[in-house]
Image (tube, rainbow, N blue to C red; front, side):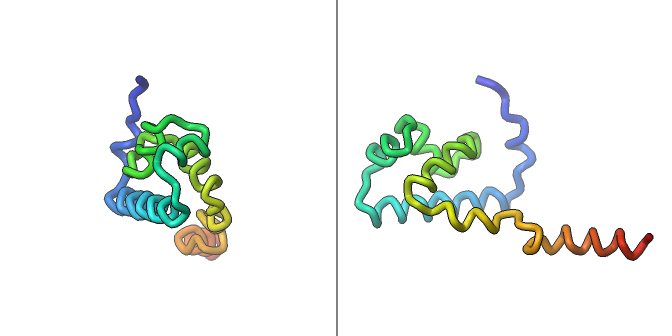
Length: 101
């Protein structure tokens, strides 16, 4: 298995946000009456990988999380993740660079 050195760079906030996402995924799965095994099958992944998603295992690929969200029909809100118009830090930095010119 390859080393995942990037895991050491994850902030507490990022891990907490992922935990909340995983909890929301679990709740959405249960609301639909699906078992973990059924979700894994519907998402075309192993049960272990699916359980990693629900356990907020940061070593699980983004593709696995995306497949689960797609299976649950919950990808629409991804359109705002990292959207430039919602990136206050990015906007401030761009404005600061413009002022320096």
